[in-house]
Image (cartoon, rainbow, N blue to C red):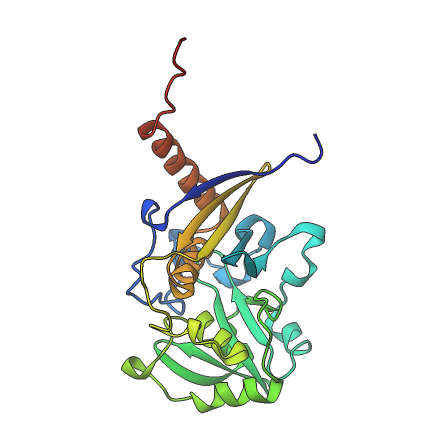
Length: 262
């Protein structure tokens, strides 16, 4: 039984509650949750366990895995650090992901001299890494996407050339799409970078535990990232509860026909 195949639930993107695909997620927005208002502690300094908070998932374009977040094998690459410790690990061209409970992950490009370039409040800005973190823990995120990266010098140049772009000039919906575009140079990360022609070549496979997973289909990488980030923002427990409830509703509305007696 050790080689048991995972149970897959496979749903169309339209069947699942999701973000508005035409909107931008405000990943730099205010802290969310009553505890953030009444607690005397800064939320970003409260204990954060990636294994408890974050959703394990894989992204496929047709049959090719292009992104993976997994804690199997210890998940060393997903370890998080204080901003000060993270600075000692960063090299120019690295992608940085800041994480905190009940917030969208915030991505940035490290450009050297303790600074990052990132999409913040609908503007591409150059900030000190410690300021961009807003006290959140962070990790180097170079290995989540599996695309071939550009050279570090090109990544830094891509980021710095966009500093000052804002509002209608922007070509990215969120900080993750901007940072990933800088590193990989793929138009799929840009707004409208792919034609939506009815096909859904992208799949988001969410691991629910107990050898179960849940698969959603998308027309574009941009749409998929919006949903993936929404899952990150609401947290692992909420995602599992939401998908379990939806699956029960889906099964009850599509009952399995009873076998006919011969």
